[in-house]
Length: 168
Image 1 (cartoon, rainbow, N blue to C red):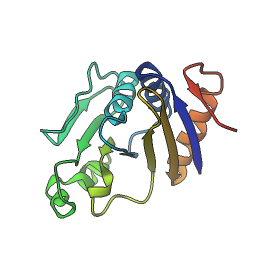
Image 2 (image 1 turned 90 degrees about the vertical axis):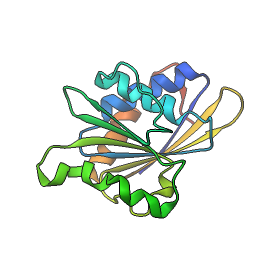
Image 3 (image 1 turned 90 degrees about the horizontal axis):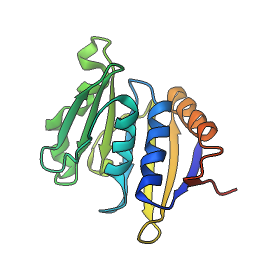
């Protein structure tokens, strides 16, 4: 399933992230693609706001930040500084089912094109494009039942949101 949204400010991108955060369930992976400065971390910050994370920080230098919330552990990874072969050392796959314990994380990954083996189920891909200084386009595509359900819920929750535009 695919869906497209447009925001016109950083606050609009935060609002989109907050709506997305309400639609997500633990065990999902959100892959955030886009050039530098397009708003990947801003969108992640909005997701974190909804889940109770007071301040999502860019993991550009630490590579992975973990935030424990009441709902789940939010894992935010930034692969920008890595080559595709170097991502295996991070063990991102381990976050998907915490070693078979049944404990689920919500995994947010910036620069996923550098991840050699991203998951194929319960994945929401978000391609972000800067249209100008403040306007951003977000193309969402889902893989798996939970990701499809999250995208449907996002569309419903943003139906009347003044901060976003949904092209016909």
